[in-house]
Length: 477
Image 1 (cartoon, rainbow, N blue to C red):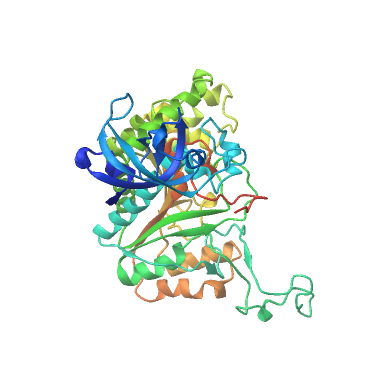
Image 2: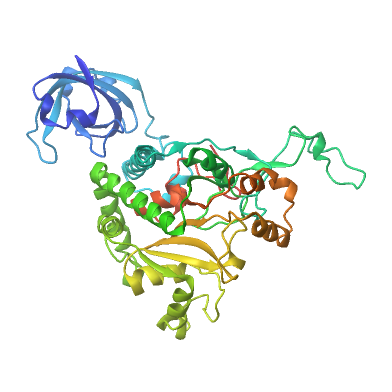
């Protein structure tokens, strides 16, 4: 007999065949009906047992969470709720699950409780659906770049540079914690460390990706990045995955075109390949929001929101225009914003970004030409001397999802910016070399993958869209 996945068996192709399926018990009722799931689909397959034909001790082992191998005949279902079912001929228990101890029972568990059981939560419908969507989005990322002539570059996880200049990095060291070697000045002597210098976990692969773009033309990174930011919000993780393309000879306009096209195609892939999971997640969100006041509910259902992004042209607006809109907006005048906008140069918060997308323009927005003071050193300075060629993409419900820029390709201006910020030239000698040897206009952007998954699944907390979240005071599993 052939072994099939549950997803394969739920299509009509194998009717009246002898089949084998492996999976975990979701429910077992009336000593007769086993709902089996193997993770291949949101749907279970019903397995019908004639209990008189089986040993009572075997049937007692069929509890929620138990792993079974079932052999039988796939037939049309006589009952409601499924089109096919298996008439069971043989049952083998791979591994039991004590119902008194197994924490994932067929009842509604809170998301907080399930975070404490991150090793088992993928057995729930919600987390299985999220992780299948995450997997599809991950594949779509690679597919998009590969078919558009990009090369995948693995940038270092251990680095001596701070791409963001924020200093919130995890140190990598093999020095003795209790008695590290010290310099004459009493400072830790990193020359004695493994790499002979102070090193950290990377916050971004961008700077290294730039070096490869200036030789391969079009590259992208997709890997883990780390921020030692003591932030316990629903939008922050200490370890997360970043997608970072870098393209030689692209200016900011081409960069915005690339980002918009990329996001639309990746979301469309999820819509085309994950519809059952998205429908389940949409219903989950609708049920969850029934208890919330109308003002706190989503503007539109999940699938409609995804199509809203994939079907709409993104509105391009300068930072200066956005500040004028926000300054004159009703929530600002009535002091409903937590952070009031009163002058040019303010760093926009999520509430401002969401107002622009959801209330004012009613479509995804790309803001560009930001004040230089609130953006990173590597962004190209505009002719006005006060703004840079930066761009952020803003989404409904989430605010900023992409941040990017045209990079500063002029050596003299880049050197001025580095000096002004107190960055050591010696640390970035290799980055400056790109501006000395064959420099050219180039651009790129970063997209936090978990933010994309958060948007695509309708979840409210970023800890629920990564298998094992790393946050302040939490590195369990």
